[in-house]
Length: 366
Image 1 (cartoon, one colour):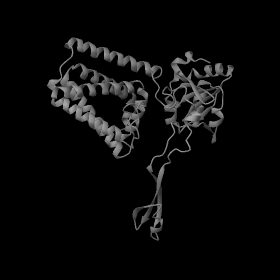
Image 2 (tube, rainbow, N blue to C red):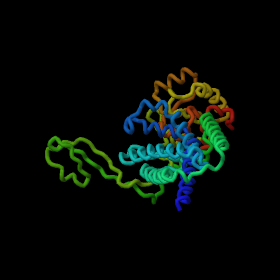
Image 3 (cartoon, rainbow, N blue to C red):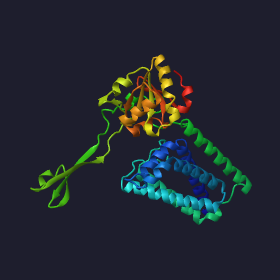
Image 4 (cartoon, rainbow, N blue to C red):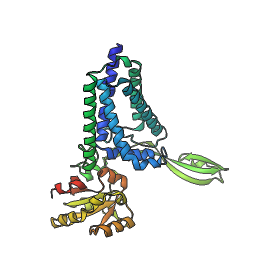
């Protein structure tokens, strides 16, 4: 029984770490965005790590895959199991902190492929922690599948393949797009809310200063507020989350006007996505005006999409002599639409067609 239990834990943990690592390695930029949330001042308050989020993301997921492979083949069993234990202890702390303090709504454990709430991620990490502890207790039962040389070659090949995969997706696009804005998606339908969809239950909380103490009252307790109390603030507490459409934060705005409906009706719309122009790749920005002229000649309406300020937009347009206009959209939404900065997305009557990294502009089919 001990041998069977240990082998089950070995296979289950190894495969899960490999799948989790590969899913995130498919989209390391997305995982880096998630790490930036964790590093933010409102979560772990480690802002000095934010510039290194992408590097940390790539290294972490490669280690995750390699440890999973090492466990399956039984290579360096003591190092592997202890490394897995330390990693899952850190992840367990992170997911518990996020869940308990409601800091990050999606842990990013499996990227956009399998969204998990912080509590679901925490329970998953607890199960993994128990399984890894079983492996640690029965570490002598873990036997290598091959000789040390063959195992070392397997680990080396795994490392090379992971590095190549990371390099490819960072310079092009993810192999598989699990996001709500994948090619073929109808944005208009993605924003629709069915008539019978469950509604959110929200409770209004009113905060009053009562004799120097801040006291909370629900919307049903307003008659209980004593005379002389001073209003401080109002908060909306979500009791039950209602239906949230796959696309719920997409908009195209300019100078205070909403052009979303108008743009989604365009039969041939080309969008240049740059969530932050200050961080955009200069080589990529330099390619956009030429593409703009080619697209317009073929009947496309061309716009830029960014969350940058008017000053940054003006500076970019002057530097690269671009003639298309930039429209505003939330930075998180733009990061979700496409990871490259800049990138090109084509819409046909609101349906997402081709999406390319700025390195692959030559592959656009107009």
